[in-house]
Length: 116
Image (spheres, rainbow, N blue to C red):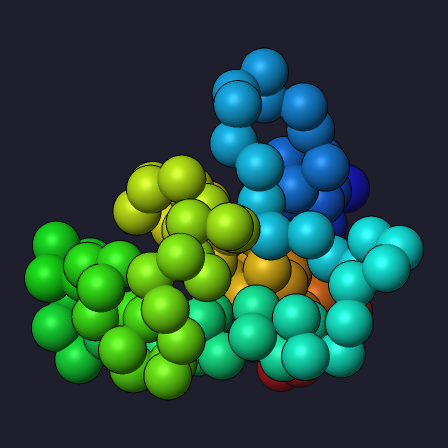
């Protein structure tokens, strides 16, 4: 097993592991959620990532995220109790899949024949 393959395996396991925390990430697609609710999930995630990219994690507030997404602060609290839960959701929904995809793209290059 290569380092990249091992890391991919560990990332996949950590994304699905039960951490024992009370964190309730945004629902992916539970029954009965409307297309509008799912679009609001994405709008909140997009807004949060934009703020973090512009000003950093410490500068992010739930009020800023709601305003940028064009939603109420209550819309965030319906999905995450605090900034930490929002961060965990962002990691699981956006960062981890992007990292997984990037590493998956490296795996063939790392396991293939060495070019001389």
